Amino acid sequence: MSLQNKMKPLSAVILALMLSACGDSETNIYAEDVAEPDHDEDHDHDHDELSQSRLLVVEAGTELAHVFDTTDGDEVASLTLPAPIGYAYSVPGNRYAAFVHRDDNWVSFVDGGVWTEDHGDHDHPYAEAPAIQDFFLDGVKPTHYTFNDEQVAVFYDGNSETGDPAGVASFDAHAVADNGMAATLTLSTHMHGAAQVRGEHLLATIRDADSASTLPEQVALYHLHDTEYEQEKVFAETCPVLHGSAQNENHIFFACGDGVLVIDESADFAASKVANGDALPEDARIGTLRGHDHIHDAVGWTGGTIVLVEPDADTLETLSWENSAGASVVSGEFADSGELFVTLLDNGSLVVFDSHDWSVHGEVEAVDASVLGEDQRLKLVVEPQGHTAYIVNPGAQSVALVDLEVMEVSTKWELDFTPLTAAWVGYAEEHEEGEDHDHEQEHDHEEGEGHAH
Image (cartoon, rainbow, N blue to C red; front, side, top):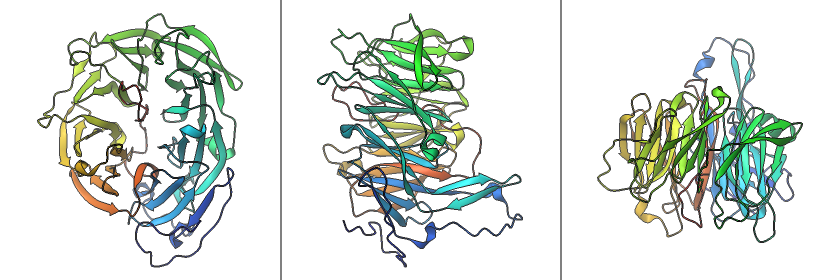
């Protein structure tokens, strides 16, 4: 395969480095700026102002991930992964990215090549070539990818036709780096479920094998023993047609047809239900949730309605904002270490909320959504500790960068391939502590209950 710079010509194409991992995987390095930076130990400069990152952009319908330097928009490398890519996510710590090959029952991983190392009195930056990792996951239909600030849980839906049951694998960045072991759970039947990992505990969904729906209706608590999870209890509080989950510092949230199931780890995993009440339109339900370690409430949405889930409340609270266009929320993410909640609408607008009082921080018409094809969707990626949002627009073959401080499109990358999704890797100068503490990202559904992945 002959690969070339898909973004714009670079002044120097230094080498094409072929690396092997995971079968036929391949890495092509295009730019000279991927070598490790100068190791001159000049400690006089301010290491607190460090910021370097890359965006790994998936080319739709292919095994290709293109690696862009976010500073100048240059493509520094491309990677050929083992199978066509459906979804891409950051791994906690933001050095590694995960790529889900759902139809091929596989999850592969890439070292993004930019990170910092603790040198005692400062953090030392590194920038090297991205590399496909030996670590991988295999399981039937990996679908929901959730994480906290250290761990990831991947939920496998299983397959009703082959009789393969659902399951969960959990891991952290150390496992990716060292090709370590993932902890696993095998469930009793297939389902379109969800899981949240909490240290040595795991919360995962349960479905009655005789149910007509592929969606689960209960949640169980599991504890890790060696590398396998064993069930401790099933919560009595039910969660019919469960879809979507999140977590924050003390609580785990699961979206149900009749409200949101809230489990309080600080109260020995006590469960309660926050009912829909009058917050939602008739016959609507929350199918997507977001949470953050620094924020007490979870956020959910359906269509153009955004709600807050206060763990101790009786009912959901509708978030007030002007949606004169009647647009629907495509995605939502916490940015700036939880200070901002960024929502992307299906008309291409970006609406950002201040999480202190949930007032509107700003709004901008970021991209042209009218150019999207029938099966294309906008994708939102944010810097978790920074002020930049990236909007992937397959219809326009572009990525728009939005400055969340001034609410303006700062630049737009014109691509000569059709992007599908992306993952951000690197480190940012803003707020070292705290990360997005939920993450269940969007994916396409056959059943149409909403999107949460």
